[in-house]
Length: 292
Image (tube, rainbow, N blue to C red; front, top):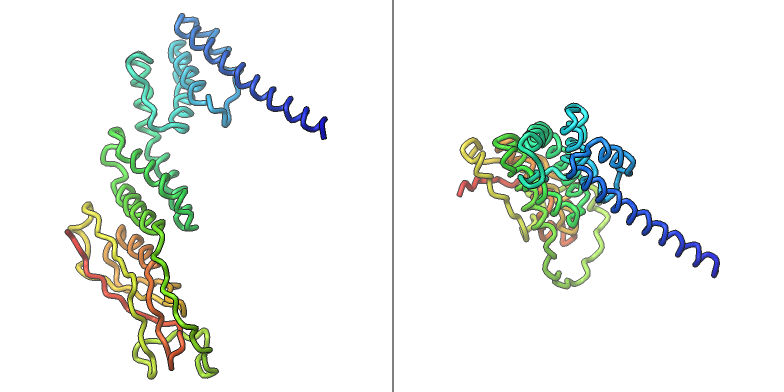
């Protein structure tokens, strides 16, 4: 046991020493760059590890500055792309880089930002789909900051609308629901009621589901003039009053439709019953567009 503890302490000490050594080499490379000794600085930077290192952005930043100073433009662009990929919001200031270097950063950012934004939307949307709202919310917020960057301009306007809509849905879904009201145990379903049958309001003996929560997201301002006035959703509600199926019967707008369907999956109802027994129920919901 004692030997294992000593071995663990040695590993921690080595890792700490390695991090300190990397910091020292990075500081030396900065000093060499400031002294216009670009070849020496670049040689030192090339010996530092990249990958997932916390200093990767600084390493690639100074590598790109050295390469630009040495006239190695294509290599510098690759280094700048690495910086932008790690931190797409990074822009070198006047005190850090010359106008030529800042122009090179600006050109690479302008080219890469749409691709980076699309990739980050995929990550945020995947977290939303698996209902990991604690991950999805900050990802959507970071994405909106990126989409609002001046260099993005008017590009990816539809993605900006989607990201804002999904952020609102994420915040709403992450809000704890009210404490449920304790109800008396329901009687067992009689044999005549099939467990997997989906009932509708016109079937004899059916008491329709009653709405508890049926929040409809607002239409984003960017598309409000291009939507239909009304839409139609079909939802399937299970025996606990949860929505287990959503079908779009009448579209409102291709950008708004997925926001509406995602919201519908969060709706809740008092379940429909047949002879007092909760059953699955098909409900048609007409959507009236709110353009306010």
